[in-house]
Amino acid sequence: MPQINFSSLDFDQIKITIKNYLRANSNFTDFDFEGSNLSTLIDILAYNGYLTSFNANMIANEVFIDSATLRENIVSLARNIGYIPRSIRSSRASVSFLVDTTPQSILPLTLTLKKGTCAVSNIFGGESYSFCIPEDITVPVTNNIASFDGIVMYEGSLITQTFNINTSQYNQRFILNNSNVDTSTIRVLVSTGISDQNPINYSLIDNISNVDKDSKVFLIQEIEDQRYELLFGDGIFGKKLENGNIVTVSYIVTSGKSANGVSQFSFSGKIVDNNGVTVSLGISNLSTVSASEGGDDIESASSIRNYAPRLFASQNRAVTSSDYEVIVPQVFPEAEAVTAFGGEDLDPPQYGKVFISIKPRNYNYISDITKRKIVNDLKKYSVAGISAEVIDIKYLFIEINSSVYYNPNTIKSPNDLKTKIISTINSLSRSSDLNRFGSKFRYSKLLKVIDDVDNGITSNITIIKMRRDLRASLNTFADYEICFGNQFHLKYDKTGSLTPFNIKSSGFRISGISGTVYLSDFPSTSGDKGTIFIFRKTSNNDYQIIRNNVGTVDYQKGEIILNVLNIVDTDIKSPENIIQIEAIPESNDVIGLQDLFLQIDQNYINVQMIPDTISSGSDTSGYSYIKTSSFSNGSISR
Image (cartoon, rainbow, N blue to C red; front, side):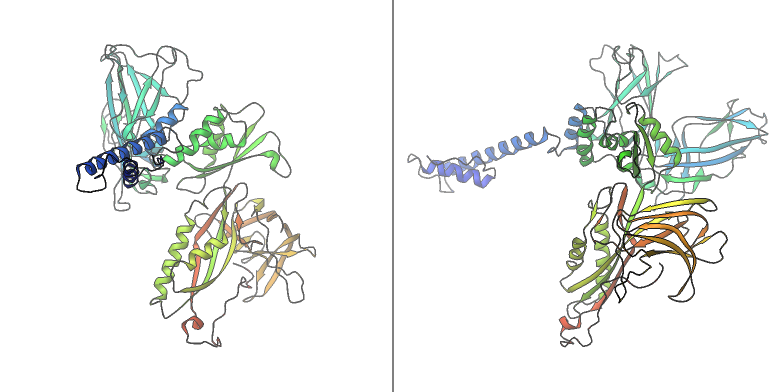
């Protein structure tokens, strides 16, 4: 009997295995004739074996979170270890407006903006979005004016759903009918019956710690089709619902991140006064405090696979830095990437502290208010003696300047090829290799993706620079520390001596000095450290030193420290006042060290197309060949 190949899972392979088995048995002779009845039976057996092996393989894969592919199974496996995937997030905007109550026949004492739709956006990206509030907002009337300040609106539609509790119904479930629910907007009110005018508010929790039999709480879990089910207490953990209770659930169904960036709104809400009279006159235009932001898609399957086991390993306590990296996305779902490190890793060390840097989704920085809220939410996870501090994210930008040689005989349009090259580099800039903490920019990979864009490309000479953006505190005496986390390259003159202008900056102005000034450096004779000076341009590439020793630079660590300066203005003002500082890395492979978030700046990708006259055969001697330097230009500023 031939040896059976148990790894044969394909239909044809299974069929061949069956034929080999029958071939060893002389009782059957027409199994290899496609028109025979036995051949048809073999096809049926092979088909059945194929389906069985496929199902067995799928079942084996779907029972492990690492190999599961169906979202429902991944969510179910994550639920078993206490992980709740992040729901879709509604984009939030803040507006203010005034209401003049003078036209009212009876002057009110208070005005209430009713929950539900309160504003619609102007056309944005070809769409108009509705914004609503999940709860009523009441403000007092002072001198006939009611001021609604900083009203936070959520993009989407407010939906209300009611459940009647029937204890005779076995396993009654509370399933929200809609998908795309922002779970942070769920509000639950429980009343004893229809006549109850004072329903009790139930709070959403994510674990049952500190929950007793009287706690008015509920939990949620994701079920099929990205919908959600509400879970209430059983009388031991959480208050149990009673027969005849009425559960009223309100939530917002949203379109997610597509509404991010909306800044113009028109009022479309309902306002009533304390007398129950609807107010429709005297409403001012909406003033935008902050454009909509924070909207995001539902957590992906890959993210669930990544965070669920790590959150389970942390056991809802923050002891190590990796614990904080897992817990922060739970208390701040808008986090795209998180890094944390202990104060003992700093120079000088700060023992007993953990520093957290967060890259938010869809915007660059988080506000001080949000930082304080995150720190406060982390306290219930932290152990005694460790304090958390959220610091601003530090972006390390890569700028690319590439001279691409091409064969004119095979390239019809150099401009079209240039567009393709820039598009390819942009795709690389969005890859998972970058855009995270602890990432690495691989120079050789960049060269390869450029060469691979088209067969007509013969070579490329690409220069990269590192850049940090110093956020200036205007009209304030402040010192600054700018860390690149990578060693700087130093330039030498023809005599072998170190030269200045290894560091270059954009222009800015400081108190007491007229005109635009710039930063640069003087290296020491050893080349490991240097001093920073401020200069003014006097001609194209000539300069006048205005002030020496305004700071120091450590070329080995890639660290610049500026002494106290009073910066009054900067050349670059969008989106905020910044000073761009650049340096050439000693190694073209750049690392996003510690709290540095590494990115390719798509606004600073410069591609120059150069015809390769040698490859095209138009100049085989190379006499007119255009040469490109492999080193950075000699300008003294950005």
